[in-house]
Amino acid sequence: MKVLPNTTNAQHQPINSENQHTTRRFDSLMNKFAGGMAKVDRSDFRKVFDYGTPDVHTPPSELQEVMILYSSKESLPTRTKIAHAAVYNSANESDAPLVSALEATENCDALNVIIASHLKHTNNCLAIVGGYESHHIQKWTRVLERKGINREDPLRHVSRGLGTTGRNFFEIPGELSTRKHWKRLKVYLDSLQQVKDELIPLAKRVAKNNTIIIMVCNFGQSVLLMNFVCSARSKGFDLSNILLFATDMETVTLAK
Image 1 (tube, rainbow, N blue to C red):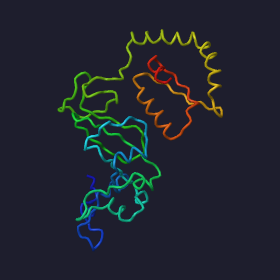
Image 2 (image 1 turned 180 degrees about the horizontal axis):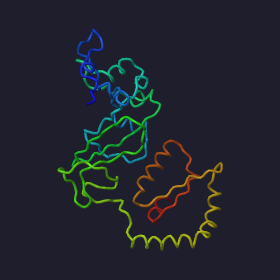
Image 3 (image 1 turned 180 degrees about the vertical axis):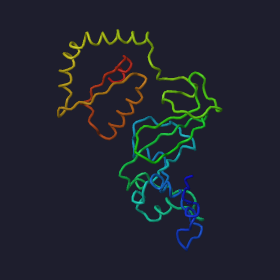
Image 4 (image 1 turned 90 degrees about the vertical axis):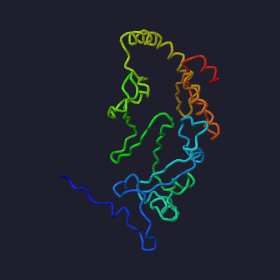
């Protein structure tokens, strides 16, 4: 039987003789990904870090702050008082320090942003596991396809397309769907040379320093397109070398 080290006493040891009620926020066994914690106002965080996805229009009170976890003492904010409060609880202040987005991340060499579900009708949990860094979030659920949630079932690994009702939004295409798309692919292949003859002069016209930004959008994703354009213009970015492929007339009208 493997005996785990007893960290209970170490976790609740006072860090100095001046304050006998000061304890670490997190167990030392999680230091590599939770060595300290700070909070940032949500609106401030969004202003500093524009990560592209639309925000909740009216965030409820439970979503007004962002949690920042630190993986090392070197990544903590520079101010000694804030760094200490990020790592330790105290009798006078048990809550994590609330600081600006810039101060909270001033010593971070990298920042991974995880957008957690805000849906009220789901009992979601978030697990952070130390190890090789992955930019893929695994999803485990008690949902069975076409049956919905059954809390008597164990959690199992599913695709991100499986919704809470049991519907899989990324189902493997069947034979009828495959044959339908074969016909569409044939239209593309038959007209490929004609499209290239039209596209090459257009691409040369919009290119800058031999560079073109290619975007594809349909009307269902048009809010992301508008968000991108508005954000880029607010920052003074040049959008003249973007070549947009719109898949429907509504998006064509919107883009123009």
